[in-house]
Length: 393
Image 1 (cartoon, helix red, strand yellow):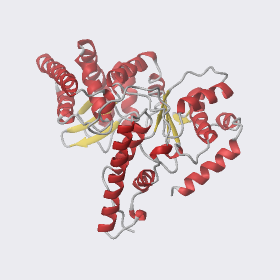
Image 2 (cartoon, one colour):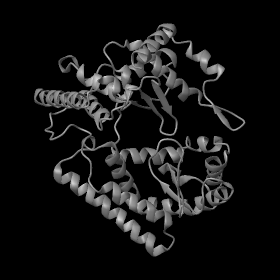
Image 3 (cartoon, one colour):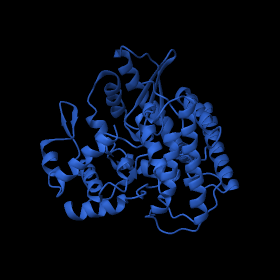
Image 4 (spheres, helix red, strand yellow):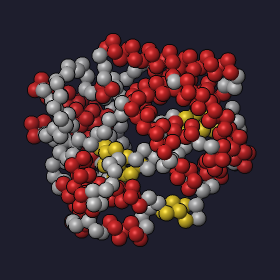
């Protein structure tokens, strides 16, 4: 069957879930109800006009539609602390700062190629100007961090961080340290060509590579600006020639890397999204840590995923010390112990870390599996998750 793609459907469901995790005034609840009903009508209209049904939607879109269509706003519960009602022109998390992304991308490209002190000085001035413009714009319109899209928040934080002269100097110094190692690795790579064009920005994972006629664009997580020349050389070999990532992964757990990440998150006003529509990950964390970790495990950032996954129900990101749980499990029909089991599984990754064997990472080790089976409702949780996965194919 030919797939039908409806842009924005998954994002719409995520915006609604974000709003429902917060206290709502009656006025806002009714506004949200109208928004949901209109979104469902629009999808129904698109399907009808194409002579299609829900089966033609990609799985994430289908699950997002089912969430919206089956949502009972009167049965939802807020886990957040009460807050004064706030007037919204649009659902939270939906305000995009127009033109900011393209300007930011231009700054990144120019920084990757700049070598003279004068050009870099001009770029620092441009970053400072862009940051001030964003702050003035958000203040003028009364926007809070939660009103902005995730991308706009991230860019806002990046610009604010590097508007600081010390941080900017660290950025350009990191480019100078990183380039030799990556150029050397590129010289032995078969699919990519020098020169190395380096960018430090928020990304999942350790790197992204983009080949161009004028060189290779290498995108690295922002906190890597603290890496040494040796670490960048190791990073280059891992990215282009299959080298070991062990030293790099270990460095991402260091104090310097984590402190940069924490400051960026504060400047971006990145919030925990632990409060769900039916389950609260903070409550789940407290139960799990009290029962299985003796209350001695520090809390990572806890967040529900922006999409409704059908196979992978959790993920632990050691780079950001973040546990992400699939929004598919934030459902009235999913027992709390099932959410607890996934939280427990991901916290085991935090506690045990990873074994390295011949330069490769091993996470689900025999020790991990033994620890995992300590969960009291292990068999029942596994069966419940299998049922959820089957129902979301």
